[in-house]
Structure formats: structure tokens, C-alpha cells
Length: 360
Ligand SMILES: C[S@@+](CC[C@H](N)C(=O)[O-])C[C@H]1O[C@@H](n2cnc3c(N)ncnc32)[C@H](O)[C@@H]1O
Image 1 (tube, protein in one colour):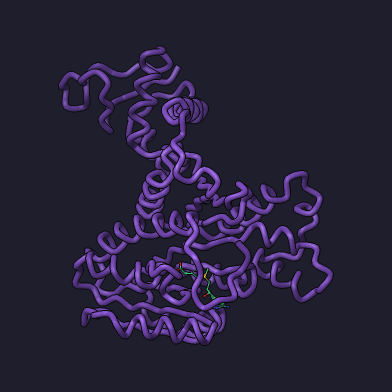
Image 2: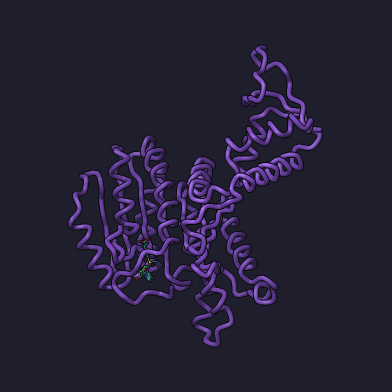
């Protein structure tokens, strides 16, 4: 689907998948940060009208509903930004029809995301220390300069979830009009795009380039690929955060949407059951084991160290680690100390954090 020009538009399967990841993550985010902070900030930089053509809720209504159900006492500041006048009005009306808890402070702006973000710098400074979640969901590549992303991520507890429109970025990369190319240079934070242009796989090169840019300002970065009904890559959702728990929770959300662990969703195969799901997962677990062995070869370490490696440096979860270690022990790729640190015997096929593992 091209960029919709209508007030509302149809909800694609991949947009449903995007909302499912956002919802899964926000359920965890509001609960976790709400327990320890009296103020939270949710920014929806490209908010849309709040509804799709068949009445389904858009991201602002989804976020508000999840925040309500989280039932936390923190004050939550919601900042919704929508540049289009008619969509802004529609969203405003939708929000007026909602019952808003007194602890919610909602601001809705008919402006461009970049203007709002530049002018709210003071406000964010004043609320320094409040966790921020910024959802940045444009139709294209215009108006999301990397400098703004860098600025946002410089806030101690800010996480971003951004839709990187890779297909249109690729198609317009060599556009004859300089102003168009400049939007892309701003987005990438660099005008040096020659290696992307010359690459055999420009989509992969663009993905790498943006991922590297994000990694230069955030400790944890996760990409999730979205394909359209022709099975062509349309955009990547990137999550960027400096918090390991946020990273783990987003991985869990992504695994829930793509149980094959490819971190990819395609409208083309929407609704079809993958015949190879179990096979894929076993192959994936073997891939994880190779990564672990490569990292820990010949070392003797507590299981906790392997757990931290898996959670911080791979796309896998703690639950996958147990299966990988089971295979490793069966195939004598590791030996596991029979006694735990408390002197008690270790139960077979369990790997508590203090278990000592020797890698061959
Ligand atoms: C992909 S839609 C957002 C969908 C919405 N986030 C959701 O998930 O329901 C992008 C929206 O951003 C608006 N928009 C376009 N350029 C913008 C800008 N520079 N700043 C803010 N909003 C913009 C468009 O009018 C459109 O409604």
C-alpha cells in the first residue's frame, strides 16, 4: 500500500503485527517503570487519527488503554503529535470521547514531530529521570533527523521504537531533487551513502547502516522486519534502549509475534501455519549453541555469565538457553559440575545461575 491520502485507512496485517509488538511491550513497560517512578512520559510522534477505517484503534488509543489497565499510580504524560489537520481533529475528538484517569496528562499537538521535539527539549530536561517511551511511526523518511533520535536517546531512561521506512528510503536514495536526498541524509545522520548505493543488497546495507547508527547512541538495538503482501521488505521496526530489562522485554514481545525467531512478519504468509516451525526452532537453538560455544570456548564459568551473554548479546531468551545447554551436555560439548554452590546435587537438565559449566 502506498501512503494513504484519506483521513482513515485500512489496517494491514503488518500494521496489526506492529501494534501487537507495541502492545506486548507497553504492557510490560507501564507495569515495570510504573512501580519505581512517579512520572512516565509516552510520546507518539506520528500519532495518526486514532482509528483505522473499520474502527480498529490506532496507536494513541492502544497506549492509553494499556496504561489504564496497568493500574499504576504514576502520573503519565502522553504527548501525541499529528501534523495533518484533519487527522489531528479526528484524534482530538476520539480522545475527547474517552474517560481519562486523573493521573493522565494528555497533550495533543497539530505540528510536525521534529518541531515539537525541538520545542519540548526544556520540558524533557525538567523531567529528567522520568522514563520516556517514544513511538516514531512515520509514513516515509521525511522529518526524522538522526540528531533528534540521538537527542532523545541521550535522556537517561529513554527508549525509542521507530519505524524505518526502508523500501521508500531505498527507492529515493538517488532522487534527482537534492531536498529529497537531504531528508534521507538527515534520517541516516550522514550524506555518505555511496557504499549503500554500490551494495549488491541495498536493503540489507540500509538496515545495517541504520542499525549501526542507533548502536552508536544506544546499548541495545533490535530490528524487526515487516514485509508487504508481495513479500517485499517494506519497513523495519527498530527498538533502541540503554536498559537491559527493556531489551529483554522487547525481545519477548518480538518472539511472541514471530515464534520462528526470524524477527520478521510478512502479509504474504499471514494466516498460514509454518510447516517448519519446530524444525526451525531446533535449528535456531543449535545456532544459539554455536554462538555460546564460540564465545566461551575452553572457559569455565557460572551459568549466570552465559545467561547474561544470551540476554544481552543475542536475539534469544533465557528459556532458549536451557534447551541449548541440554543439547550441549548430551553431546559432551560442556561438562557441568555435579554439585551446586550450596553443596547440593544439581538436578539433571537444570542450569541454575551458580552452576559451573566447563566448555570444551
Ligand atoms: C503511519 S501513520 C501513524 C499511525 C499510528 N502511529 C498508528 O499506529 O495508529 C503516520 C501519521 O503521521 C502523520 N505525519 C506525517 N508527517 C508527520 C510529521 N512530520 N509529524 C507528525 N505527524 C506526521 C500522518 O498524517 C499520519 O497520520
